[in-house]
Image (cartoon, rainbow, N blue to C red; front, side, top):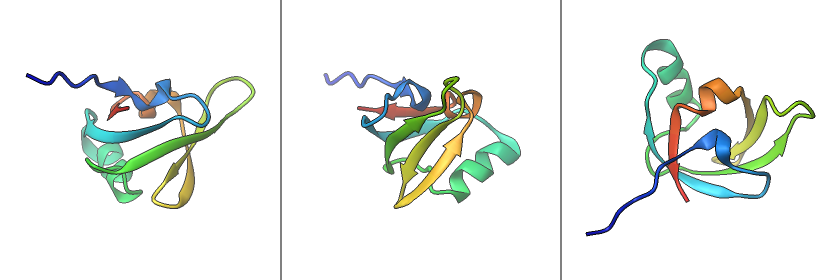
Length: 79
C-alpha cells in the first residue's frame, strides 16, 4: 500500500515544487484558487518569500501568483 504524504503549499521553500492534491477551503476562496489554476494535478513551485514570510510567490501554470500563508495552507500538495 502506498502512503502519500500531504503537505500544505505554504510549507514549500523557494525553489521547491509540488503537485496539488486537494483544496480544503470552500466558497468564494476555493473558487478563486481554482480560477488561478490550483486544481488537483497542477504543478506549483515556490519562487519567493516576502521579507516577513507572508505572502509567498508561487509559479502556477506559467504565472507567478502571490498568496497569503493562510490561503496557501488550505492547498494540499504532494512532493
